[in-house]
Length: 96
Image (cartoon, rainbow, N blue to C red; front, side):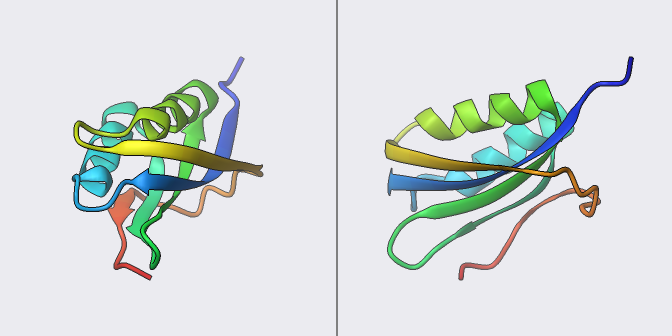
């Protein structure tokens, strides 16, 4: 049976900019074979889209709930979406 693939659109609030959140998210995504992107938003939040095998995407969402060392995550909003298979890799996008 093929693994189920899913997509998560995530918004992370708290002290999540200036603590290497995007770089660590990329590292964690690459380690798990998850594709998509991450970027900083005006106002201090981080936005990300994760696509891949269900277990791996859920692990990335859990990473967002704690963040890298130095981060103080106050909330994580997750919108589960249909898998699109439109990403070739995981990228750090320019800030919004």
